[in-house]
Image (cartoon, rainbow, N blue to C red; front, top):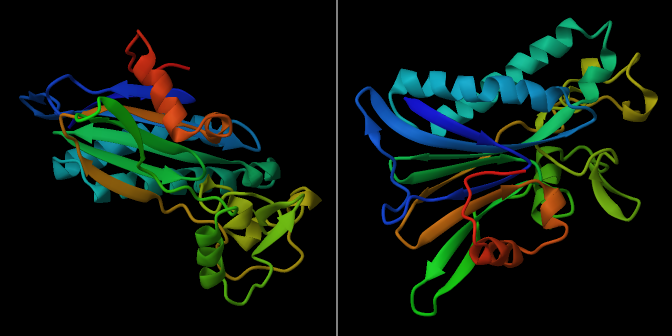
Length: 266
């Protein structure tokens, strides 16, 4: 399994013309394209760790199965999460604040004409799809957002924590998980996944008054699979910073009207 990677806060991937996004096959296995956006919070450590390890895990699991699949991507996310959890645990006494560092993670993988999109957090991916009858390129959102402002996310959290009526609360007029964070899924944020790391010497603002029995946040990504078609034009991946200012369709219109077709940029 060979993969080529592109990375930035904003990634735009133009598909190969007239090939529906299909990628060449090399002698030793399928060739794939890998794009990702890592939006860290609390510090850069988690994003840097993901940047150094997720791609390698993806290649390793894909090589084992000699294919790309939902299972390969899920295993790569899990291995990355577990690796950084172990690193934080080993440094707990000297760097306790590392347990409050985390990152959203949005990944796109294209292999043999199939697009996989995996997401944790509030970044999301948009597909620009051509409508032949009108010539318009419409925006199709491919990933689910994990943000407590969304009612379905709050319902999911309540169903997972039926014994905690304060699992989501309004803080500064915005819904937050435990009043601390907007997202319900991320890589790491260990202080909300393991009660043993939600105590002194962690800063008081991160410590919960009541101990929790199960992880509050999840590292299980939402993964969607799409068979690319000739009228699929390009893919946009971005952190929430872009989507706070542009609608999905506005972003697609900007890319479609640009005279420069690019693979990825910041």
